[in-house]
Image (tube, rainbow, N blue to C red):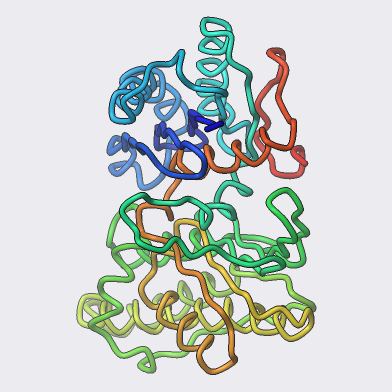
Length: 342
């Protein structure tokens, strides 16, 4: 018997709803919030208000695109956390209300695990849907998280390395802000980096034991470097934007890959996947593939539409939790920090 899951994602500034049936994607609708661009970052209060406006039409469109009604779903999966508490509250409350109205069970999903499991979304138009084999290593890179996870099954995750300060996505945004590229910074840095010389400038790399990351020092290195250069040449940034982006991006990728390679060597795992918003970065995607060819890895690179905070990944994670017998009570509350969510 087929199983249909409605997924709802509202952890940050994207409102999304998706429908999957037996791992196959039927719809995935997203509504972005451009209001944050002029502030240089996500404003939590504005994000939660926008979710309130967007969530009903987004869910309605996802159901219509899938050709079903709310009564036709078997369960409702939603992002419980981590994320912005106000944004999570909107998605959680809507899922609860829909559950009460339809009598369908709730499934709470860890946003990070959704990213990790995004590789298991099957797309009907693909002739072959390639999925990772267990165990595999997942490099999750986004604006709020940077971590390496050993994945032993759809429901078994072991964190083996993470950032001790800033996430790599924050480093990209900081670079963009300093150079004057606006927000979100990652895509703009990546675009200019493709036109620059990655060896033009050198930035400091952190020395962190084990498999953990650090990116705060790299941001500081860029800031001090540019401060000194601007004091001598006020137009330095404008004349060197492409090379600055290429060099900074190269430094971040080197930091990410160094620990990922060590994780593969220490665990003996050669099945490697990347996920999260920064996994859309062209330089990182190329480097993962080339490193994999050199080291004998089997690499899994997500489609660009599954790198962002989308509901398809919440639906697929909810699917595996539901078939394992997991459901949530209607008194469940969202959690903002990953440490508060198993």
